[in-house]
Structure formats: structure tokens, C-alpha cells
Length: 150
Image (cartoon, rainbow, N blue to C red; front, side, top):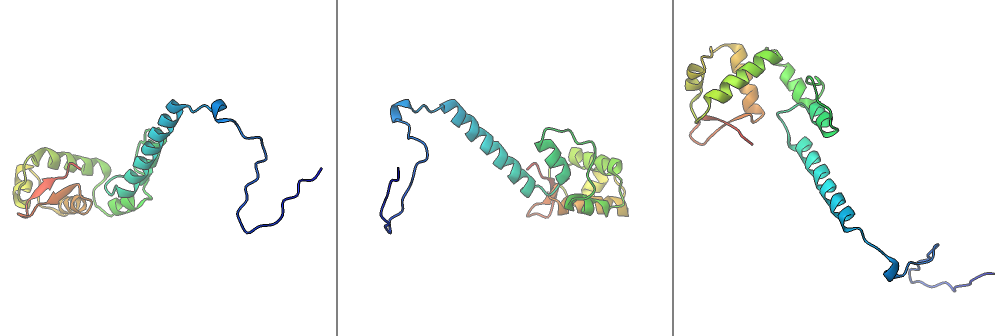
């Protein structure tokens, strides 16, 4: 049997299955809440990836999927920039640790070198410049260096 509906300019919606009565419809509020929380986590992860400029992006992706990265990927924008330094990972991490423990309060570049016991050589200067470029350390309006906790 055919059901004929004459053509109109109005939009038409055809249900292929019988509609459910509203009395028979149940909404799982806990499932909606779970999906909302999960969506916020995913958005937060995407923002972290997009806004991070001082962490290996490959490591961010691995952490997002629950893995524990062992080393930098060497291929992302952060790693390529980091590879230009004369410092290997161990030297850079030691320099970063010294700078962080020394910068309890803002200080000038020369004071930082002196208090941290760092020599003014090309490796240290390149490492500090890399930290400035990637907002690991920042300069305040008084032109002093401070650790960026953000």
C-alpha cells in the first residue's frame, strides 16, 4: 500500500521507526555527566597540546593516551629547537634544575650565573636562551629573570 503526500516547499521529516512516547523515554543523567566530564578532559588535553611550547609534543600525546614517555621524540617543533643546543638532555636537565632552585626570587642574569655557580660559556648561555624562548624562565618589567610556574 502506498502513502501519498503531495509536494510542498516546507521541510518534511519522515520517521523510519515508530516514535517513543515520552513516558517510555528514560534519560541516564549519570551517563550525561560522565560524557560531559570526559569532553572537558579531552578539550583540556587539546588545549594543553596546542598551548605547550616547552614540552615535547610527542610526550604530550603519549601521556594523553596513558603511556609513560621515556625520552623526547626528536621530531616535534620543541625537540627540533632543543636539538640545536650544544647540551645533551642530562646537561640541560641539570642546568634547568640549578636555575629553578636558584630562582627563588627574581634576579639579574649575572647574579643568576654567580649564585647558581654557572660559568658564562656558550652551552649555559644557549640553555638559558632556550629557557627564555620557551617561557621556562621569563623576564619581569625590572629586566630580572624569574622562574615561570605557569
